[in-house]
Figure 1 (tube, rainbow, N blue to C red):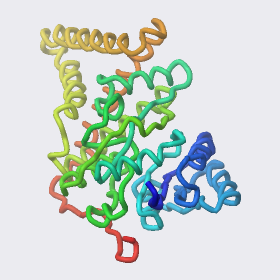
Figure 2 (cartoon, rainbow, N blue to C red):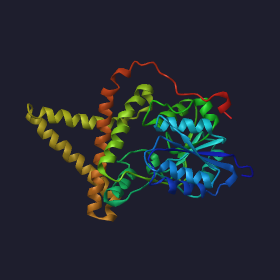
Figure 3 (cartoon, rainbow, N blue to C red):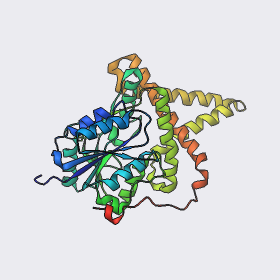
Figure 4 (cartoon, rainbow, N blue to C red):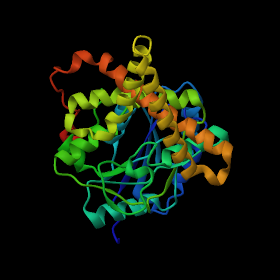
Length: 344
């Protein structure tokens, strides 16, 4: 490419002091021309040292800018950055991610070569400790999350990708990120993009490493929120859902029904034991397939991580049905739009 397009790398951040420096180091070490990209870090009122770390980078490198996100959530951070971006291409990077040196260049080449409206790579998880490593194995399993970007090995057109890289005019055509969605805003945006005729391509050559949750409590909270906010996406876009999204809540609901029913229907207790037994056999088999090289303790930890992901997501979805029960007839409020001056 003789004329490299200008890229705006946007980073939503809140309390990322432990990882933001390594992220910025990897971003500033890109083999993309140094005068053809900027880095916009949008801080959601962090209570740790994250803003000071970014300010220090900004003093040393004029390409780095720190912006404010008073609403603190990811979609507003992304929209603040997109509106302020000078680039013809927007590249999202999260604060707990580290990029390969050629990530931006490969992404821009993929956009230009395929004519796609959004491109991204795999989410390669990085663990840490007995449970962090298990979470990395669990999310890389088809049984864990199910999205192709967790385990895909070939370039192909997909429904959604990790992070994302878009020509900026996409946001003028489709709108910005939905600022109601604390979670799942990327799934919702990508659905709107495809509904408008856009194409999304995953290229595994776009390499990055994601620092996953490292303890049970944080993993449960993360996937509970994913499940809960998926209900709001369902209410806005029923066709965005696939059958696999309904499996965890159906499983959790079934367990609840059987636990309650066993006190009055003896057969329910037998069925409950059978369902739980079959489930644990399936989970152990999945854990063995991805963790057996690390020994029995790793297999058991991975099985625990898979159970946490399934149950938390399912329970979150069921709670979302209650929390958002009054929103089924809520008139659809479209996402924010780019103003004319912000489109270029």
